[in-house]
Length: 342
Image 1 (spheres, one colour):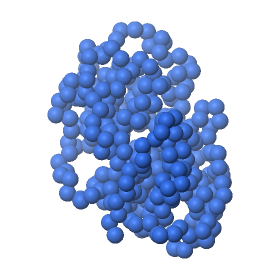
Image 2 (image 1 turned 120 degrees about the horizontal axis):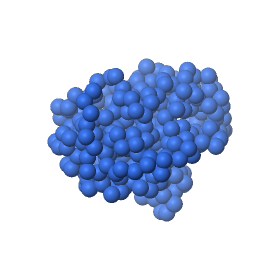
Image 3 (image 1 turned 135 degrees about the vertical axis):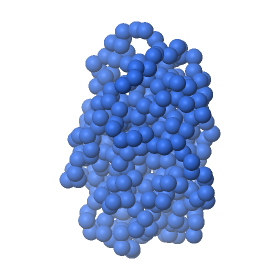
């Protein structure tokens, strides 16, 4: 493999000054947890779902090919338009449609979440429990279905497998920082967006880069199977895309000096800055990246129900409380306004 010279943003220093055993553990636990499969989180029951796929080590590029440079034009209409919720949600434990009855009779809701994208989804390194903004949203859906805690089973998913697991019926929902795109909307349904963010770039604090335009010919990391990776591939400046299994792997690679930058949603990069204060965010784009819950196309009643839960969470302040807990301690902005296609 051709060795790529280190760019002007690289700092010659001892890596141990930033990757102590504790920080290495905190960074790598998010990449390692898919090996554990699904474990009980607060308000959940122990899962018997199959273990998620093994993550790749931080220094290894997956063998799957990089996505081709995009030639898709935005021609699918309003990709964020979802199915209208019922005027009144059914009472907990009293499902009124086929998919809801199946879930309630089963006794639990299966939800895929990320373990490598704090504050949206991660594994608490002290308790091993799933936690984060999207975990709490999933628990709202579980409580609306069952009227009690203990009926949500979480499974760790990756950027590469999250959509397929819903499409193939292995999970009821995926709440895993999944950007709503035309290609994905052809495979699965999405709830109305519950969060808007922007793509951005993470670099070392003393690097000269101000965005992807400055990173031509430089190694830029993004997680496999993500729109962030596609953005690197499509960048006119022609950076060298490096795909790793998770955002945490990208952070470790940048700390080790093997990549110059990371592309991801700004909110996820803010979590990385907290982990490593010697980094900064540049090149923040437009706040038009809509994130939604992925649901199988053959379960429209579940999509409508989830949208009803999100609407109620907006009205009763639950969404704002979750936002304050995980994303911002101050007064949160309102959630995205839903658009329905029926």
